[in-house]
Amino acid sequence: MTSWVKIGKLSDIPKRGARCVTTPMGRIAVFRTSADEVFAIEDRCPHKGGPLSQGIVHGSAVTCPLHNWVLSLETGRALGADEGEVRRFDIKQEGETLLLDVAVMAVAAD
Image (cartoon, rainbow, N blue to C red):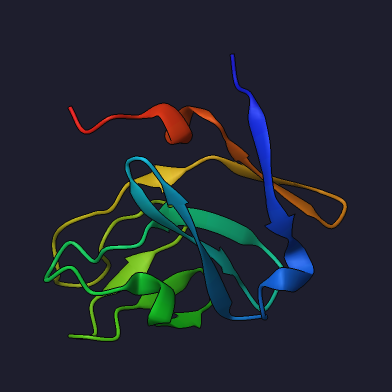
């Protein structure tokens, strides 16, 4: 069963930008595309740990600010020749409100 927790509003995130949510398992980057789609992924590039929330959003992907790895916001997987992935999280929008699945708040590093 999925339970949701309010994490903010769509207008809190600029188009083609991100904001972060801190959870017990680490930081989650919440992205807004130019088409107002919202995605939530781990805020740590699988390559060298760069902060994806500070990357450039283009389409439904983000480019890491450290070494230009491109990751899909939809799947969390690296695109192109790069290999690796970050965890993605369930997020939904109800009107202006953004909600994140509370299961991520209780996930411990196993």
